[in-house]
Image 1 (cartoon, rainbow, N blue to C red):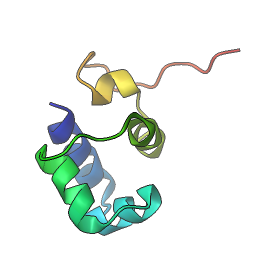
Image 2 (image 1 turned 90 degrees about the vertical axis):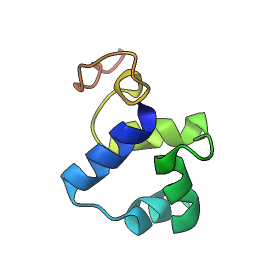
Image 3 (image 1 turned 180 degrees about the vertical axis):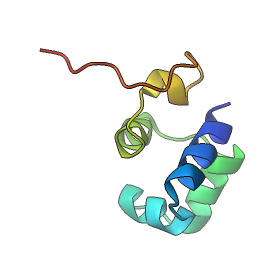
Image 4 (image 1 turned 45 degrees about the horizontal axis):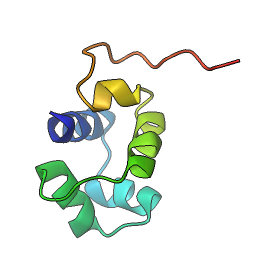
Length: 74
């Protein structure tokens, strides 16, 4: 599910794999493997992806179907 969501959100924003890979400081080939579920995405990158796509890590991980981000902690 995670892999489908990061691909869907990337395409929805009009971003290329290369663009996201550059932000994460990985190769486009590595990012492509993340989207295809061939390798695990480090937790640190999941946090960054949630900020890029303005959603929660729970949504990316399939723990909720609500894409709204959580309110910031005080």
